[in-house]
Length: 133
Image 1: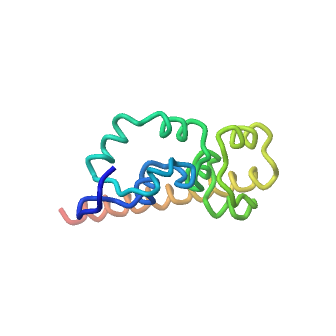
Image 2: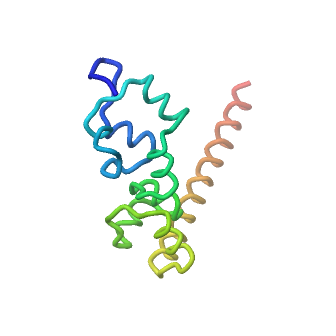
Image 3: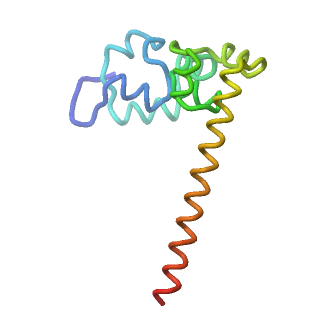
């Protein structure tokens, strides 16, 4: 990796953009700054450690929430405070505890309402555009 300059990012930023859990990365990665070119290279040709982290985890909270199809707040309400591995996420999905069933239903309802509001706004905008002609 390289030294800091105006076109570099901190390891935490890169980890967030890559969707990986920073403490699980190699120490060399954690101690360096990454240029935009190096970041692009990591995305295009991920090293084995990065591919392994993406495949098996541990995964950061946003990734865990996405894989479980719930919100990050839902993770907290369910008592999940630590990063989970792919195997742990799969186990939760195969035998979902009650909190996960509830959070998934809540998350689906929130998404459906957001979609309804978006569609309603689009209808109003289209009606307004037709009236303006």
